[in-house]
Each structure stands twice: as C-alpha cells, then as structure tokens.
Amino acid sequence: MTDGRQKKIRLNNRRTNIFILCMLAYPVLQFAIFWIGTNIGAIGLSFKKFDWDVGGYVWAGLDNYKRVFHEIKNNSMFRRAITNSLWYMPVTCFISLPLSILFSYFLYKKMPLAPMFRVIFFLPSIIPVVVLTKAFTYVFDSSIGPIDHFFRYVMGFNTPPWFRDYPVSQIMIFIYCIWAGLGYNIILLSGAISRLPEELMEYGKLEGIGMARELFTVVVPLIWPTISTTFLLGCTSVFTVMLQPLMLTNGEPNTSTIALLIYNAVNGREQNFMTAFGLTLSLIGVPLIMLIRWGLGKILEDVEF
Image (cartoon, rainbow, N blue to C red; front, side, top):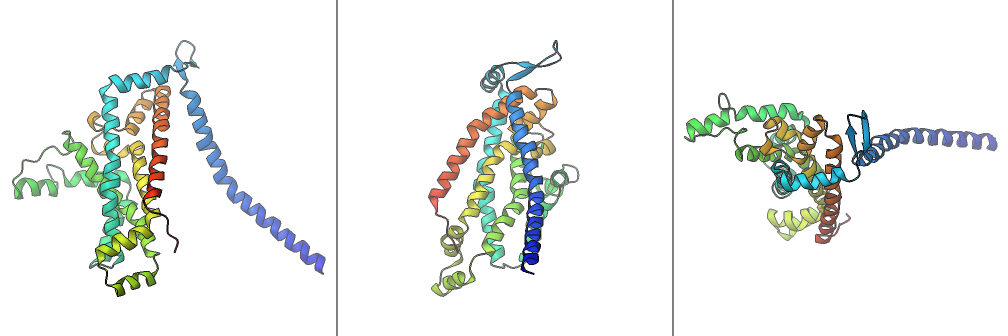
C-alpha cells in the first residue's frame, strides 16, 4: 500500500515537473530566438554590406562604424535626431515622473472626484497610440480644434501651425508624451503606494505631519525602488521614441529621433549601416544607464516593509 502511494506521488511530481518545463520552454525559446539570435545576427550584419554585383552580403570590416562617426560629425540630420532624443530623458524623468508621483499620491489620499481623475489618467494607457495621436492632433486642428479655437478667438492669439512649425512641433510632441505617459507611470506608482502599511500612515497622522511632509519623507522613500525603475524606463526613452513624432508630425526631419531615423533608414535598405549605428549607441548608452542605476541606488536605500 505504501509502495503504491509512493509511486503515485512520484508520478504526480513527474507530471508537475513536465508541466512546469513546458510552461518555461515557450518564453525561454522565444528569448533565445528573438533576442539572443536576433542580436547575434545584428552584430554580424553590422560588419557586412550588400554588394549588388555579388547579389548578397560581403564582409565590410569597420566601414559601417567609420561611417557612423562620419555621419554624426557631418550630417546635421543625425545630430538633430540625437539631440531631440536626448531631450526626451529630462522631459520624461523630471517632468512626467514628478507629476505622476504627485497625482498618484492625490489619488491615494482619495481627493475629490478621484475616481473620475483615475479614469482620465488611465485612459491614454489603454488606447492605441494611433488613435491617441489622432485625438491629440484633432483638438489642436486649426479648422475644428477646440483648443486652437480657444487660443485664437477667446485669448486673441495668432496660433502657429502646431505640428508643422519647428520648434513648436517638437514642444507639442513633448506635451503629448507627458500627457500620454502619465497613465502608465501612475499605474506603477499607485500600486506601490497602495501597498504601504496603513499603520505607518496612521502613525504619521498622530504625529501631525502634513501631506507635503508625508509625501517627501514617508511615501517617496518607501516607494523609491518603483520610482527608480520608472526613472530608468524614462532614460531608455532616448532610444525608443519613434511612433510619437511619426504620427504627430509625419516624421518631419527636425522632429526626428534615433529610433525614427533607424526606422526610415531600414526602409531605405540601410540595414547594415543602421545596425552599426544602433550598436554604437547601445555601447554608449548601456554603461550610462547602469551608472544612473547605481546613482539612484546611492540616493536612497531600499526599505523593506
């Protein structure tokens, strides 16, 4: 009887292990093919060029990398794209993130009309970016846009072409990114704040601390790991922003970004050169991101509660 029970237990354990392996196999295989395999292929592609006489790729050595530094030095479009991309980091990290922390705290404190504001903040996070950009451009449209009409007819301003005149077009993209990015940040930060111990918050009330002091001396230190993660995600926006300028300004050169530049160049059969360009930026960007991560860890220590 005991042997039969042990066999049944071993059989159940084996089935459990097989199930776990099957569940893990899919993400591991996906990671191996679409991340490791793709990146290894990209590294090899950056050292090659397409030869029309041969009808295939031939070895090019460091020619693509030499061209990267040449274009950055001499091509104003490349420098503009890099400059625009770098601006997304302070916009995301020092404007959008503090606003997200503030709004998340007010939602946590159950401010008046909190449910309505929660929907307003979260809505951009669940709407496709194509629809969201169309709605954003609509309200600034010179013919039917309510915001454009307000500035023109109520305030008496001579409104510019919002998405066709640089630098106004670039500022509008930044405003859109702040507005659309609030929801995602608030989801992360609200979840972190909601896990704070109620006893600790009640103790603060008994001590008579105000909302501002509670936010900066209690809430922020306790959710610092989440803030650090969100800050790092904001830093990576330097390399990932593409759809926003593409949809809002139709890829106007003055509002181009690194990602949009790569996207347009790849469509123009510049895969090898742009692969080298992307890898060069990664070699520069990854150490900087790691340095920022290290610095954030030194500002405040993680608190367990």
